[in-house]
Length: 334
Picture 1 (cartoon, rainbow, N blue to C red):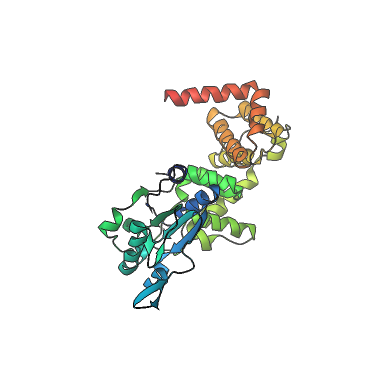
Picture 2 (cartoon, rainbow, N blue to C red; picture 1 turned 45 degrees about the horizontal axis):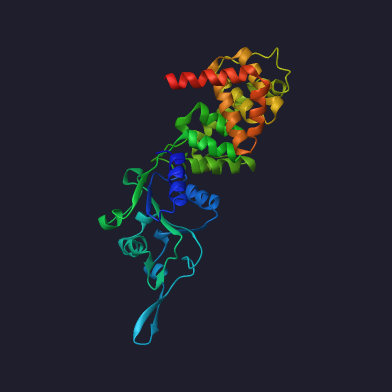
């Protein structure tokens, strides 16, 4: 499943109040923990993230203390005692068997030591697969059998939605639209390699004026730098969005077309800019470029809470309504 599919599934479990334990499988860097955190935030829940591989059995079970003629366990402060939320056991299969055994108590019995999880807390976990080249331990069958299992894979459409909502550098979004294979490429030869996580790190480096090879690796960073040079060949996007692009022609080179179309879609933030970009592309470009433009415009408007602007544009531009209607009919026919 895609990261978007995962978020929908997890949100449904929360909304339907199903306290079923969840195990999320997937390669590193695709946003597993970020998605769980978003689900908690959007549902006004607490979020406790435990990296089990960094804990000892005593850390998780608590400190032993004498209590009359028996031994009790003083629960750790980081485990939930009240409220409602998500207890996230990250890197669960990187933890040694002793830790996984204690985690099994949380999953199976919703308790560990002397602590019982309050009602309203969900126990979810995540880990990498052996094919992801992670140094993982086998998960005991009794523990695995207590989970719902979700297998998540990298997906550019999901990343693009997230990147647009978080205003990631336009050039990163444009490059990955042109070369989606660069989103996730594990490398045996480099400690740095591209993933959704490291492209997000690269965005922060770019904002600070720093090179991005330390995040995504030398090869992808070189491709990004080459793509940045494409931006020197773009037509005047601001003129097009300002309804002054009548004499500007649509570029011929594919990479420049991608950069132009993506740039227009991400920069069109008002009603008039949206219509100006659409009209210019309608006059100069084929339908697939118009569709790419509209996807970016609508995702940006949704992320910023400006869907009313799209509704107004549909009302004021019959050609826009006609294009979207015809495109949806073609999709249904396919």
